[in-house]
Length: 335
Image 1 (cartoon, rainbow, N blue to C red):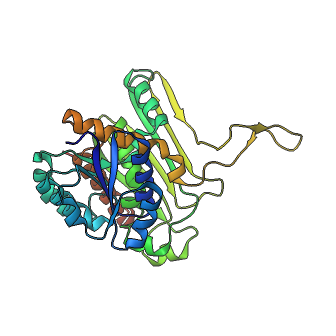
Image 2: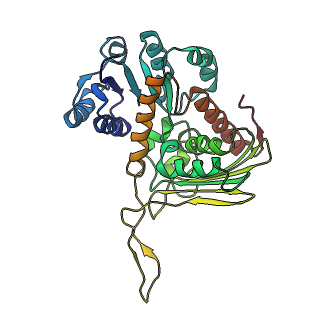
Image 3: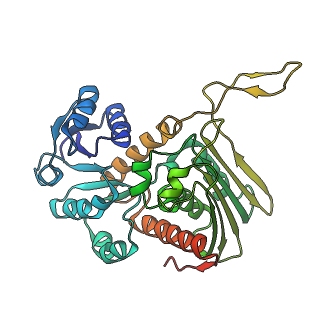
């Protein structure tokens, strides 16, 4: 490996742009290529952060010019590109989900876990400073034995219809982050019950998806996890967590651009709106995720989310999808 880790980013959409910014912020790495089938998209990224433009991800991976790749392209390309990375000896940080079909994930599992490269899954929320502090306190025994986990995730507004159509549905696209987070506190989840509703967005309903969901999951030790998601929130990006144990409770709240609050004759504790875009809310987490990926390459260990973490999150997403459409609870085995 060269003195600087040479990186290519595949996919020049909004996620690719954020990853490019993270690469730019870390002196140990260098952005060598930005790859996108629409080269104009890639040029916008390279204009801001440098690097060469390509429309051929396979050629870049096999070029010998890079040490690692960040895969932020459409989901159907994820496993094929990881497979090519293994063949080329190129480390891979891949955005979630691994695939929309769990069969493909299972078939590739042995090869992925036997690979000599670092394969890290891009569940950035795990590396958010607030969540890291929350997990550290749980691990330190601050609240004793975990009994309940409550996770709330609401977006400021729904994604465009074209995105919804290929996303795999809310459970595989949005709630999958909460499934992965839940396993940080309750690793062995055994049962999933989910409810979905169409509350406000006609085109999401047209695509056969939900815009409003709730999930209740049960852990092997009788822990209960509740997840609430919505595709809109009038007050900004709503991200909260509560962990309850036999010795206490921990909470994390939303972030605003300002912590100023007003108290007047008309209202009390009025503050600024919450951050209204997940890329803004989680900028630090994307940077931390990349730093951990780099450290993992140096140490020969996957320090972030593993392939099997990605597999488990997809199993839970599939179970929630099934439950919401059948009205029945679904037993799961994450082993």
